[in-house]
Image 1 (tube, rainbow over the protein chains, first blue to last red):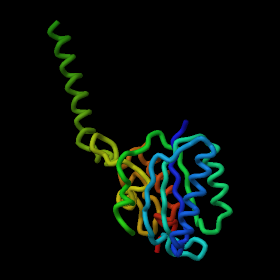
Image 2: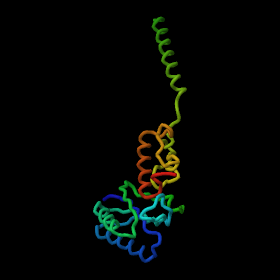
Image 3: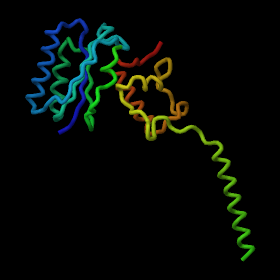
Length: 108
Length: 92
């Protein structure tokens, strides 16, 4: 079992329903592969340092996953073909931090 | 015996003075290593922005005095932050 940190940026104009569907799909993929979400963070809407697909703002969501490498592959596969997701980054980590990150507290 | 002792003293003094010279020229130590050093992480934007120039380039360690290992880690974390558009690739 490995620990992963996965962050994805979505279009800022999304309503709550679309956000829910994205979150549900990701959690479904995670459950399918016998993995679990350890912690979730919402960094809110921030201004991007550069434009991505003609968007200057984006909504950041961050999840910590305990699982195997197949989960990451499938999540990225889903996000790559979803137009609502602008960008993502997943990182393998040794330990899951207990405190909230500084991005959680500060907006922009 | 006496002679030998004197010789030793002389050589010791000589080497000491040599070392003292180098001690006076000691530079600053690495700000990111040591006990109370902050953790380098791509989410810690306040820290990362200190080590980037106005044009968003990563500053060389000969200016910032960051140790070799920490500089490697620092540049990696800055690049992660750039991917997520938390930091710019190109500045103004």
